[in-house]
Image (cartoon, rainbow, N blue to C red; front, side):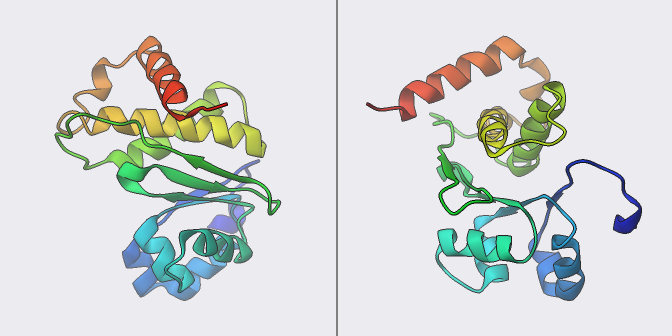
Length: 173
């Protein structure tokens, strides 16, 4: 089925079950995608290492041009095509977490939504950095309420304000 897909940029998210049950098929998929999104535990397991930077690069060597390792409340790592292309994005710091269920899916939704809304059908590393920040902020709203309840009330202005806050927390001179 993947052979029949005509797209400029293909993203895949994975789960531990796929790594355990259909590892060989998953390796085939990795050769055909542009971006792999995976959580830290899965990345370590799949890559066979406890070092997340090493895991990201090992996964990239399996085929995808870009890899994002989600690190839960610690943010994410983005690995670009060149060795020097690395981006660490902090998670938005929440004072209280109601339910983190779905945060990973919201992260990918926010990331993909930003790419789509901005016509980034062939995103660069710089585009993906911005998309990762949008994903991180979107995921933070998911953690503040049950299910999609908080996301249903979030506006673009809310996202933009939280991104500005995150930028002020993570930038330095």
